Image 1 (cartoon, rainbow, N blue to C red):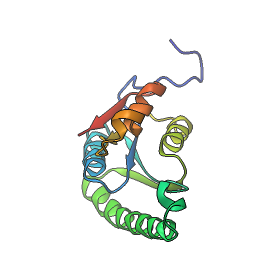
Image 2: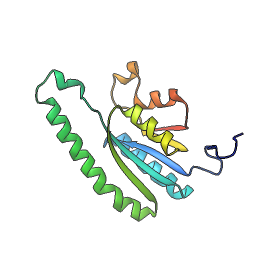
Image 3: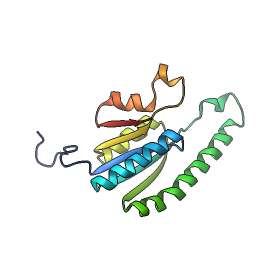
Image 4: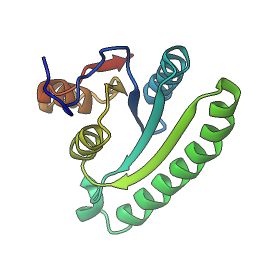
Length: 151
């Protein structure tokens, strides 16, 4: 039970749904699932694209940082173009944010600030994440919101 003025998640269904998007097929499925959930629940959808501040290969290959920034800018622009018409078709309220930083830290901070009733992300397609943990696994471990991982 919560006291006066405290936030209680999911009491009458989610009011705010946060979805992490990165342009990958699984994140786009997560966005589609989140949009459908937002439509059915009459929730606000916040889509967040996180660009990592320093790509891992930037130190090894001199032009890797520039290539990574250009690729991220292209994905960001494409997501912005696709989001508004899709939201209008579905009749949902969508906010899009593009932020630099660690994906888990950024998604966690935004989920807490909103506050989000649910967080959705796509399953990682990278083999190394089985060892060090994917964004999804790290968000689940934090344990402050329900997390849905979409395959």
